[in-house]
Image (tube, helix red, strand yellow):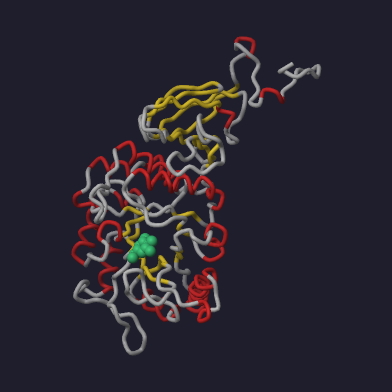
Length: 411
Ligand code: GAL
């Protein structure tokens, strides 16, 4: 969890606006909420290396020096994260680390960084690398491991930014801690829906050791150069809920000095953050039904899966997402989810209202606004009431249950 400069500032950041952001993060309680690193995304070095091939710091933009600046951040409780690229240049044309892996790690370490986001622009031709994408990322992963062993220090945290073209959810965990599964996010609903749709097929790759990275949070962002970008409050809540419960890295990239209090409150939802950071459960929630009018397991970038659930240290998690443009009653049987026990009564806690909403039996319905979300925690409180008082015997998949005499319930 942290802050990323790119979507708020692009290349246009410097010591002054970075420190202003860091102070806002502290003042607004975001550091306390868990956002405790800043990624210096693209453009933070000089455009040329020195004669020894070393990266150079840009003292015009960061006059205190990188080391002093990252020390200032650390005094605020914020660590520093670097950005580089597996090719000749970064995406904005600054030096990439291909062929300089070990040297650049040394520089980043000298400058006070301990995390590396690694992009995929300007890659050399295949006859030069004689490697595929995996091999190009492995060069840096190996340099990170070698450096950690040589220096007897913790390895850099390695965040792979390959945009999902070559299925990094399959191999990313061998090399790094997270891997982007999509291209760059934009601050409007259609992009969010498409990312959630993609994640509904890749959620299984996330566990304790590695995470699908759904890209930065657009909550509160009007979008760099994207004037039409803007999410409704309901969309922003859906965005934050999905990113948190699918265990994506959570990186804010909003100019916090002019973002709304409402956006900051969304970003600080402690109930969702504690599940994102669950110390015992690393897996993402998973879809159990796509929707009422659409088939399961079929990609739909406008209407991704709507019914999700999973496990957590705090109870069974349900995420209901209304992908339609009209309000919707979201109905489900509890036992549609693998994570819930049958024949039990459940307490419902609403992770947006932060209230207990009473108990549910067998099924529930939640009414949601267009593009709205419900994030619920269910905890069992005991067996169902005496079955003879209930209308029917019940079986999640009704034709599979039988009476004790061997006749099927459906007969
Ligand atoms: C893109 C990357 C973005 C950002 C940008 C910097 O490739 O996906 O997240 O890092 O490069 O130029």
